[in-house]
Image 1 (tube, rainbow, N blue to C red):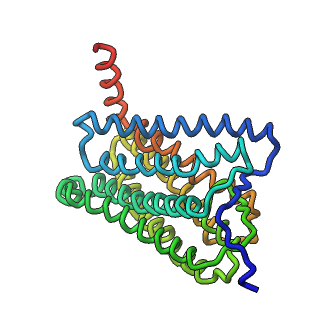
Image 2 (tube, rainbow, N blue to C red; image 1 turned 90 degrees about the horizontal axis):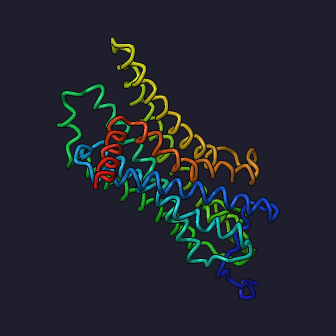
Image 3 (spheres, rainbow, N blue to C red; image 1 turned 135 degrees about the horizontal axis):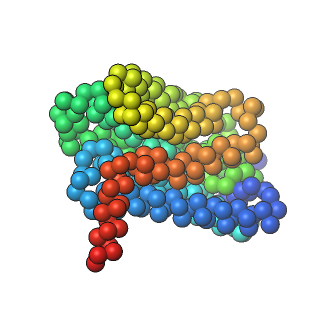
Length: 310
């Protein structure tokens, strides 16, 4: 029986399954968001690279976050845009697994970077006299490299487990990119081990980091409440609350996707959740973390003034 099975060499991404008119509208809308994501994060990278006043650990970590967000968008959005215009265009098996690996790598890296960034802010606000000693360049570089390395290794484990499963049809993925759970639904063998590893890694990479982030911001908020000046307290509270909104959106939607019972979330609803944390989040991060920052706005003004005078 197994000899008659034909192994899948390519997949069809079903996307959103809407009419041609809505697909064209979504193509224009998502293209606009894609451009905003690349421009916003590109501006952050450019400003931090060019302005020596921003050469400190906090902005070093923001650079890594911007790189992750650009990579996020470049990994999933172009394929989604192609799929909106040509729903029957296939993606190769190797291309699909590559997209899965890159998506997981960038998702895991962002989770770990958000923990490091929250720790950086905790030290800066609650331990300001020891900040330069605790968050030295060596420590910062080590934390960033370890975030990328751990994320890549964990993503590699997932892809290696997928490669152990046979795919003999059907070849239609009900998603707008090669998301791991949607790919596993097409496997011709039991995927219990994959599911167990996904759940365990979700606890490790989602619940654990989220708890650490919340602990850091709880300490930060308690320190803010002790600030005597009302204006300083208001600005600090506004910054922290906006950070927590982004963190909640990112971690919350991911936890719902990978840890909640799947029967409670139809596939179309899952696609919307993926749009939130893989599409809108990279677009919002530059605005929340950087462009509302006084130092970044100052660097932007200096760059624009320099350009106008040249």
